[in-house]
Image (cartoon, rainbow over all chains, first blue to last red; front, side):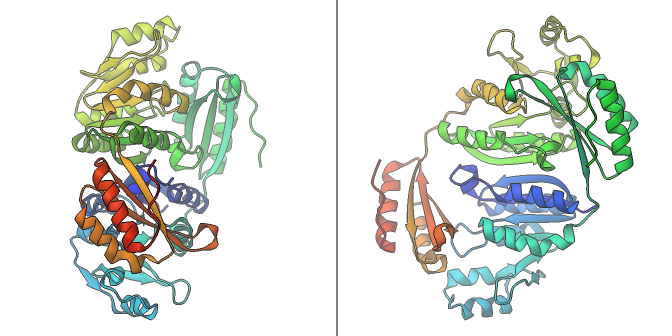
Length: 238
Length: 238
């Protein structure tokens, strides 16, 4: 399955000026596509921090998606950070320069958007729109949420894997009392991922148990077995 | 100012089964306290990933706050990950063991919650409640949102710094056209952090400009100067 890491770049998120919408969108899309999202990290508009994180994520995930820092202003330093992360120079890309000047964007600040890491690929979506820049396995997306969503759609064909199926049980026993039974079922079904989440909403303490797998047969057996051990109803199959 | 990194531990976040509430809460509290939040990273329930991230964050921030993975079930591996991150053994802490057995929690799974990295400190809040475990500069908090908030309150006295003040301008010019003026003001006021955020809400493209600083005099001068250069109203002082 394709593994994915997300890097959300922006002082505005870390300082609480804007809520991060792109991380949750990436989570939802990775899940819908069957990709394995391994980490999401939010960092500041700092080329060294970006370089460090890009190098690390690119070495451990099949695909890295960055969000933010690709405009013409002084706080847009993602292209520089990605280049530095791979030890690559930034080079002026003629087709991007033409696209920008065609829009009347001819200032030195605007043309920084045409300076991309050497060897990057351009992925074109709609005609005359700015393409997605891909440097090795890093896809560089804008931070404006509606643009992030639109550009992520161009990346999504690369993120498709086998879908994960999930089941959920609820018990009013406490976690300590059920831990050994959870462990036993987890040990017996290594391809099923079992999670245990105590919650207090609704006034009565309960534990939400989630089971998920790409092996639906194992998932159904593990769910039935755990439901039996806990004395709770197994969820109806969809 | 104290620098802070947050590590949100949980498969349930990365797979979209639960939305992360603790990251946004940490962002809001760091801001309210005057701390500098440097990064927030969400990773899976994997001791090696936790160890790696803890080692990295602990070396670069004054305080590291972890969320999640501290209960009695098989998917609770944060204490093990933190210990591994520092190359420390886990040791049974007698006072925690007493607390747990006092609640009737005597199974081997329950008593895993008393196994903490060697040399950890316990920070007690309410009597007879489980304390916060601190290992070096890493504060280990539970992931259940209302417990995370309650325990973070015990950490907050250590996160206090000088408060940041912020101002906001809005322009209908595009970013490329204003980038040089933003750069000029940013260069003149290095203690002021200027951010530029294109948005499309409300049907008309605009750019939200944020200025913030701990130096209120510089902030007011930079804001007035930028407002003048852009021909937009300066915000009324609070």
